[in-house]
Image (tube, rainbow, N blue to C red; front, side):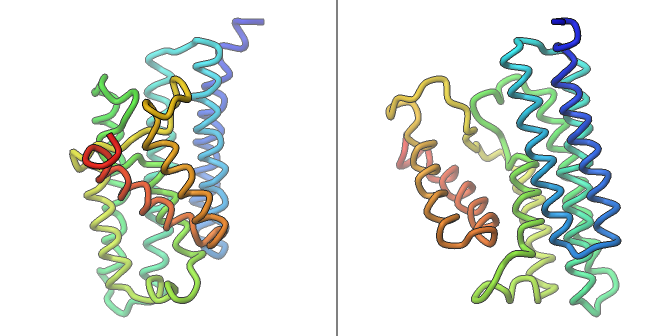
Amino acid sequence: MMRLLKHLPNLFTLGNLTAGVVGIMFAFQYPPKTAAYVVWIACLFDFLDGFTARQLNVSSPIGKQLDSLADVVSFGVLPSLVLFNLIDAVSSIEWLPYTALLIAACSALRLAKFNLDETQSDSFIGLPTPANALFITSLVFLKEPLYFITSSDVLLSAIAVIFSLLLIAPIPMFAMKFKNFTWKDNKVRFTFGALSVLVLIAWQTAGISLLILLYVLVSLVNKRWLS
């Protein structure tokens, strides 16, 4: 039985990959909100593969590589295509939508660097690809007074460039991993969690992109104010 269970994390990883492929197909056939929902499913699989691997105390080099390959598809290529379509829908400049492809390229680079870095267990260097994918794909839920963002090709292209840089920037980003539940060791996590609840109550799905911005902001001020 254990021999079968040890493959469970990889099955969840393949679920993540499959969701990403389905999302890519949906990106060309259905409204962009559909792809956003698929990213949520991919995030769930991504969480489950890590969770089950820790619970079963199983890990392998192939699992680590497979996880990154799946993430490139679901959290790199898919949000890149969603952003491409958003820019293309509002832009009269033929080349401008292609700025969105930076997301896919920098996501692949970020994941390759992550696989070679043994220090990113309790924190990350650069914006994690799932967080970036959630931000990009959830832009479609923005309402007034922020709806103007998805109506501007310049702003959307700026987002492509800025968030591509955040993916590979040497900026420490905290991880929502609890080794214990003391306030001293988890001030930043508890603070972010409380603020997240308020944002989601106030904005619902439109608050997801704002939540990722909040994550970046809290990470930036973490060492100065919350350490």
